[in-house]
Amino acid sequence: MRATGVADRASSIYEPVGVSSRYRRPPSGVDPDATKKWTRRIWPLLRAHRIAFFGAIALSFVSLIFQVQVPYLLNQAIDKSLQHHTVPLHYYVTLVIILAVGGLITGFLARWLLFRTAYDFEFDLRNLIYEHLTAMSFSFYDRVQSGQLISRANSDIRSVQMYSTFAPLILVQCAIGVIAFIFMLSISVPLALIAMAVMPLLFWTGVRMRKVMFPISWVIQSRMADVATIVDENINGVRVVKSFAQERREINQLADASDSLSWAYIQDADLRARFTPIIQNLPQLGLVLVLLFGGAMVINGHLGVGAILAFNAYLLMLQAPFMMLGMLVMLGQRAAASADRIFEVLDERPDIVERPGAVDLENVDGRIRFEDVTFHYGENPPILEHLNLEVEPGETVAVVGRTGSGKSTLARLLLRFYDVDAGRIAIDGHDVRDLTLPSLRAQVGVVLDEPFLFSTTIGENIAYGRPGAARDEIIAAATAANAHGFITNLPDGYDTVVGERGYTLSGGQRQRIAIARTLLVNPPILVLDDATSAIDVHVEAEIHQALEHLLEGRTTVIIAHRLSTISLADRVVLLDDGAITATGTHVELLETCPAYAEVLAHVADLPSEAL
Ligand SMILES: Nc1ncnc2c1ncn2[C@@H]1O[C@H](COP(=O)(O)OP(=O)(O)OP(=O)(O)O)[C@@H](O)[C@H]1O
Ligand SMILES: [Mg+2]
Image 1 (tube, rainbow, N blue to C red):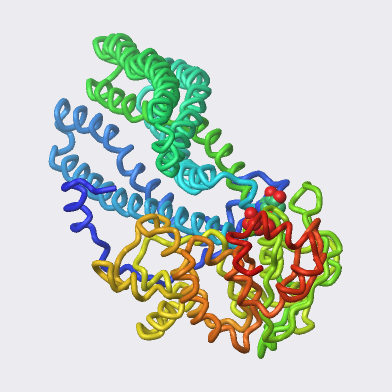
Image 2 (cartoon, rainbow, N blue to C red; image 1 turned 180 degrees about the horizontal axis):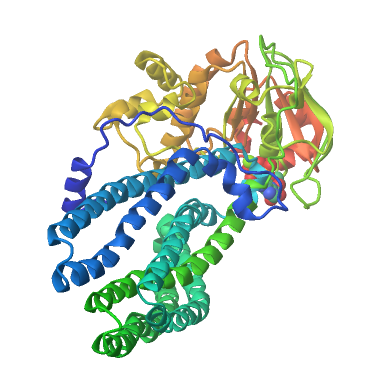
């Protein structure tokens, strides 16, 4: 999306100067005990910033202490300097200036420290969640919606941050309210009591307002998420929407959702319009009482004129904490709900974890064994049952099977995206569950059936697995994947930025970049999952020439639909009904295994070509 001119200019002004790309890990995790209250669980994260945090609270207390004395001094100045001339006026003027300067400095420091703490805390919480998400296994991502996760990473973090850092500050302000009340008492006990008479009413109105507004604020949140989901799906699925000419339907769907959202907003505005003027004008009632009773006391000579002025100032000062107290409860409820959602994610444990004492997979020969493997996704019926397969070092094996038979699943299990339910998978005799995950995934290179590219340059996409790779290595990998030709024809060559998910490239071009990306890592074991399905036969033949050379000495599993791809293999295995039901060369299987010929007739192009 294009930024507007103003945003462009703003972002060039506010370009951070000292951004380091070094990642600062969160100083601590959250409390793992799920039975504790969320504030206790999140505390270790906030604790890391305790000096700034408590510093901010202490300083804002000091700053308010400065402020709370000003009306009191005003009262004295009017009485003693203006009416009775017992103290020179400049004495009070100087004092008020000192208090103002003190309040200014401490107020500045308090705010600075508090916002720092708030954003540091938010930064840590976001990193913690992101780090946790990175550790989660595929089974987690099969279940959750990405839109939900993104919302958790944004609005939920913000509302937890707001409450955790600002709630203590609001409490400090309320404590100052108590001090202001003491000052009022010291001026005149009866007038203080009269002036405060409206405060319970103010508080009660605040609580009522929160009670009726809280449900509607939830409705707004969830409807906003609905609108966001529709927009998100529409943008991501724009190619499907347009190809079925369903724009009108999608627009109507969005209109419905945003209609419900604006209804909720109007309800909210309506309630606000009713309550806010009451809350704003109630203190005036207090002032009326002060004027009425205080005025009578002044006329009777029981009270100085300055007291009326001081009381007025105190009433204004007290108004904010009483209103904020209501807001605090609302913020608290919202933050608790957000924290619940955040902990729902943080309390998920990844199912694929390294065993203690896991070893690195090194000096790979490349022998792969699937021993009596049984596997099912979640609660579904088994995809693989008692499957046995052995691949010799350096061998190239093609896996053939009907669509949905579990071929890609074999690849996912070998890379330990999921764990087998029974049996084991071994590389060079090591159970994959005994190996460290980075070493396993570095030694087993895979070209997945859905080539995903990042929205960055082609060169960076190819170098994804080895970010430091030199340009000539990238070019060599691209050449082997038969991608160099089309890349150099692009306007910026290797520096061409591909659109989101690589949509500016054709399917076959994406696949070739994905192949180059895996070849650059040069893994001793290679898994190609339908890697050339979108590439035409002519180009595929050229890739095969290059691959034949690259596959030498490398154990390779090719998941293939095409005869031309199958012909690269030393041996073909047939996956049927969750197990390997036949193995041999292509010609042998055609002769001896009717099921193989049948599968090929269904899945392969031009079956006659090889017959
Ligand atoms: N993440 C998942 N959760 C649940 N079921 C899944 C998941 N992935 C795949 N399946 C199911 O497992 C079965 C095997 O899927 P797999 O992707 O391994 O098939 P395949 O042989 O690679 O098919 P194709 O030739 O179409 O690529 C399918 O029936 C599919 O519906
Ligand atoms: Mg597949």
